Length: 65
Image 1 (cartoon, rainbow, N blue to C red):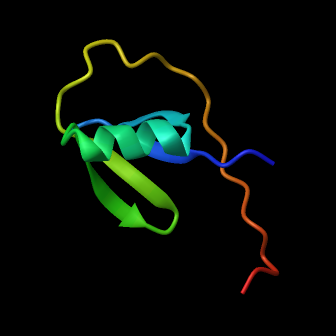
Image 2 (image 1 turned 60 degrees about the horizontal axis):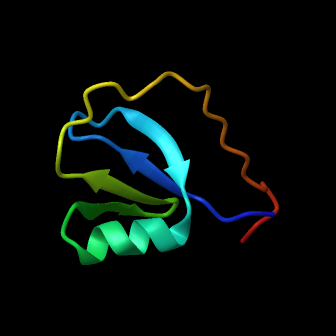
């Protein structure tokens, strides 16, 4: 299973999830901030003009502690 980090634009609209390494890079460069720790979500500091419309799906294990 691949890990992904959820991404929001400045208007709190969901964007496509990204790889954790890219999220770390955005955070380190100051282009994003941590929005929520669980599920880990970052919010971009710049507006995205054409975010694209891909369907998003979250799968959580109900038995997880």
